[in-house]
Length: 123
Image (cartoon, rainbow, N blue to C red):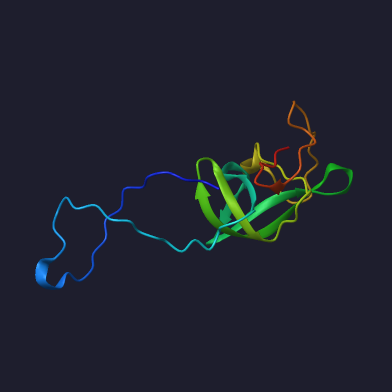
């Protein structure tokens, strides 16, 4: 869960001028992304004509482009609502140069990490 303070601007009716500038209030916001979520780094996403995609590792290190539904973004992460399962490996570096079917060479300390709830997926 992420908590903190947000600066927002809200417009609503104020009959009788009961609320004045400088007053404080408590606001409850419905969050459709509450609970455990599958998250990946923003840099793993590509966008084409308003749709979002990730490159998923397939057989023999060949990548497959897959459409995903995204949710909230926070820090450098984005919630994936649909299209990716926990444990699937994705590419997060150099995605702008990839094409479906490309063979990638996993490397570095982050190789082998998998997509998971509340964790990043990198390859």
